[in-house]
Image 1 (cartoon, rainbow, N blue to C red):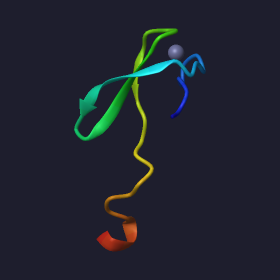
Image 2 (image 1 turned 90 degrees about the horizontal axis):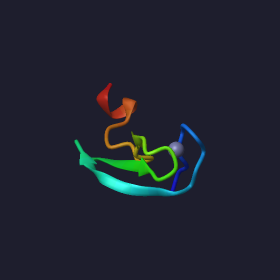
Image 3 (image 1 turned 90 degrees about the vertical axis):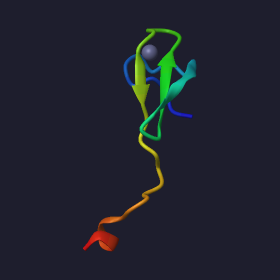
Image 4 (image 1 turned 60 degrees about the horizontal axis):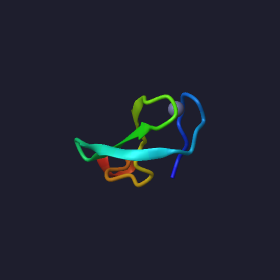
Length: 48
Ligand SMILES: [Zn+2]
């Protein structure tokens, strides 16, 4: 799991999924954020 990009806290909880991207809410600063999926569904090479 990633850490909060705002305060660096590791206390994150799931805040739903939007457009296939998992959203997280920080317990420390209470800001929601999304983390990029590490997997590439369509790479630049395939599109070319
Ligand atoms: Zn935070």
